[in-house]
Amino acid sequence: RKVEDFGEGGAFPEIHVAQYPLDMGRNKSSILPVTVDAHGKVAYDAIVKQNENAKKIVYTHHKDLIPKILRNDEDGEMDDVD
Image: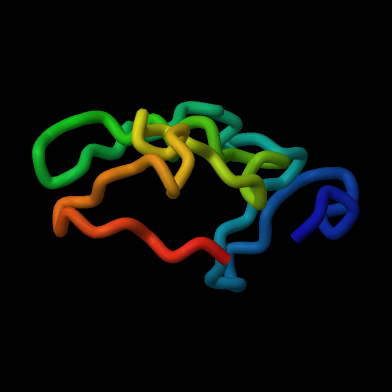
């Protein structure tokens, strides 16, 4: 399904797969759909975590920046320090 597979152009109608001879009709858009959480807030981490950033850790909330030893969780307990 590469450009070289089609030679000088033209598609093969007897083959029932998506064919893009000479890359005509291929979707080249770089539009990213915006995802939202359960409360309707935009998930900005999905926008940042694209391509080469997909494997990196992204801190999107203020509580992610506070050290665990200083953070008070909802339970009122401190996290264990490793």
